[in-house]
Length: 179
Image (cartoon, rainbow, N blue to C red; front, top):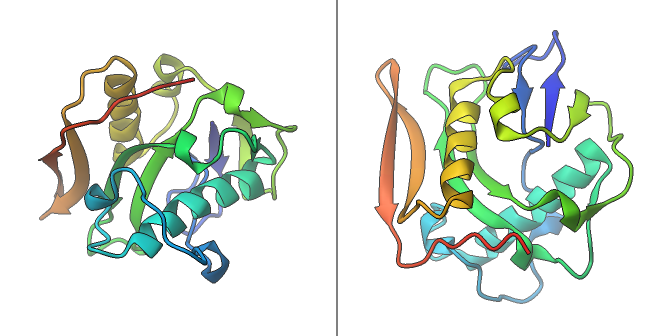
């Protein structure tokens, strides 16, 4: 699912992005549970933050797209794709984590809160033709690698000087199970 940011947006105007946003206090769990790939999310030993990141991804998808992750799917259906940190000189800073889930695990009508325009599901090969920022291109390429089973490392996309830099951490298991 992609949507186009408004032309007047402070950060990345007129480009397509994934739905997303900040963690809210209500996203934190009342009890701790295991979170797949938490050690790759840059949260240290904070399992509560790893859980909150997954919950925020589900909530933000609902708010920005109008789609709800089906109850039977749950947070365990999300697949961690990678994380990214904006450059120091960026007018808006973020330390984002990217998750994916198959379209069929969502229900509802595409609508959302108006933050993103032209919301729609797009095949990766089509999405790569849209106006995108470098991190979105990178995460789409990582999604393709995950879908094709070609990942043994999880990425951190960041910047060093004026250019992007990707660091990979090996992992024993990074499966993609669409169903």
